[in-house]
Image 1 (tube, rainbow, N blue to C red):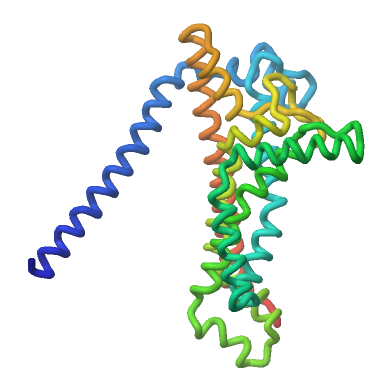
Image 2 (cartoon, rainbow, N blue to C red):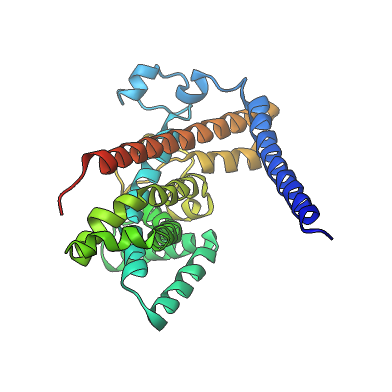
Amino acid sequence: MKPKTLESYFTAFAWCCGIALFSAVSCVIFFLIYKGWNSLTLELIFGSTKPVDAILLRKQVFDGLFPAIAGTFSLVIISVAIAIPLGIATGIYMAEYAQGNLKRAFSLFYDILAAVPSILVGLFGFSAAIWLHHNFSKNIYPCMLISAFSLAFLVLPYIIRTTQVTLENLPQSVRLTALALGASKRQNIFYILIPCAVSGIISGIILAIGRCAEDTAVIMLTGVVAMAGVPKSILGSYEALPFYIYYISSQYIDSKELATGYGASLLLMGVCISLYVISYLIKIVLQKRFLTGGRRL
């Protein structure tokens, strides 16, 4: 077979795969919109409570999804805030300091960590909560903080790997320029390499946000409940959209109640999109600052 013919087949196959993936995602999105759009009302979110009173926390919402939305936002933000410094620091260590057998051992460990089922992470978080309850304080139970630490542990490989790979793939000219001008290795990392790698690092953070927002197995074992109101403390129980979707889809009474599950799915997509947009805007701001603002060594 001629090389040009083979290349044409490969290109056609790549196009078919891309179209199939786009079609599958589009079908899922349009199916959710078709099923849940009619139930996506203010009543679904706020119930019988006035939106202003709910947003300003003047009144609790017991028959709407506002507490679940607030709980999902809070959980994702806390989880990512825990995972970001640990993941970026570890990725920097793997890219710039780890060598030889130690680097290979750590790489194997992080690959295994990425493959751990989320239900096992949830079970570990639940066991940790029970251990803390018996050995440190009787006031410690499965709660939002335990869920956040468990989710942070779950998404660490995404941030570590994207940080490591992005730093390692920087051009050699970029890596050596500051060192050639007399900068220390620490200065080179913080003022040259990380600014150049910020786009890839934030891409890993965006992946972590998506995983935190959608995971149900972890939060089921570590503190989420069906009705808790807007979270008042990180040491208390909370509501979350993934759990609501799970128990509505498994215990619905009629088609109307099932439709609220589709509406909750659209709300969860909205939460994820909002967090993605915020992350993207942060990436743009950081890129502009590093590219135009400049920093002294």
